[in-house]
Image (tube, rainbow, N blue to C red; front, side, top):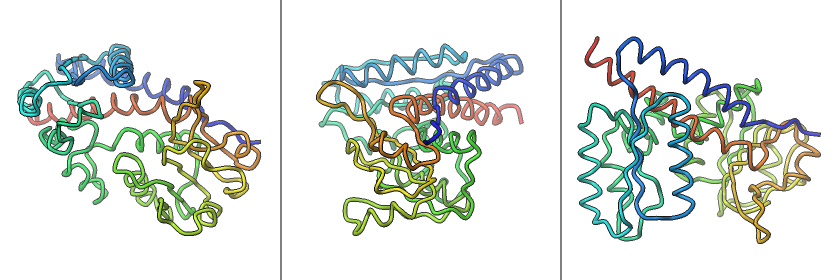
Length: 287
């Protein structure tokens, strides 16, 4: 029976460390790190995410700035607001909650955030730095996965690592992070042939495709570490991941539950990135 990788426990541990570091930062510089979150429209899921981010900021002592714009806001008005925040010394990190309304170009919006304040790490410069192995910020969900593996002392070097999913938000960056730790990485996707055979080779399997219960126990190697990034809602309202939890726990050594696995880590890593941004920005003035 697999041991659960408890994201709530790890997240709580990291937030205590972040809160301590934020306090030290305030004492040393007399400045409170600030995170600005822009919400466009009233999407229910996005609204919940923004509230959770606000609550998490307060928990660790980061100043939370919420900006709510109507769903009809013009793209240029949104970008003007971002440019205003780019020059605001009280704002160290900027996050625009995705998805955006269809009339707004997400790429243009993301690119308008200066890389130094791009705590989501979606800007092309930050993506490039990650590819070079010299990131200023790591995308929050992949960063959270790496923290989970570290907390549970999962060895990556020399291991077969398989990522199912090639999104810019999770699949591609987690593949790069595993590679940077000397894992041998295979990325699978919708066009992959013999996907089951690839998955069965994995010592570490990361699943991020948005298909409920897609990976089952017949697709994994005994003793594998299985990281389930998916979060899907069934017809009965219950949440499930991309992994069939019951069958996988019979064969895996470690597995993340849904909810309570990767999910709690994402906002925690956003807090960490905001503090990193504040430290980097303050160093320009003091050093």
